[in-house]
Amino acid sequence: MKKDIHPTNYREVAFKDMSNEEVFITRSTVASKETIEIDGVTYPLVKLEITSSSHPFFTGKQKLVDTAGRVDKFLSRYGNRKK
Image 1: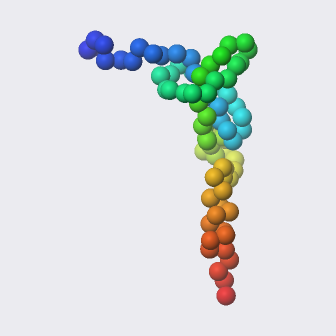
Image 2: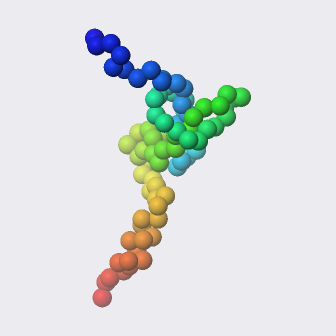
Image 3: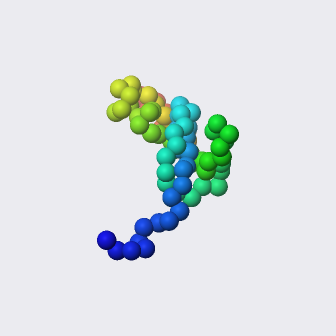
């Protein structure tokens, strides 16, 4: 293997699923400006819209996650166009 090609800044990072507020900690090199304190330890925080804990494929439940208001925007733009 080649030397010095892998990142050296691996650290524990907290990932938060914004649709169900679940937080999990894993090692990553992702950059983050926010932090979160869990059990007295401060971790960099990365917010995610959807993870395996909220994705319909993994949960078996169909759930609409509309954080940006896309459905409302569509309905206001096109509405009910039946005549």
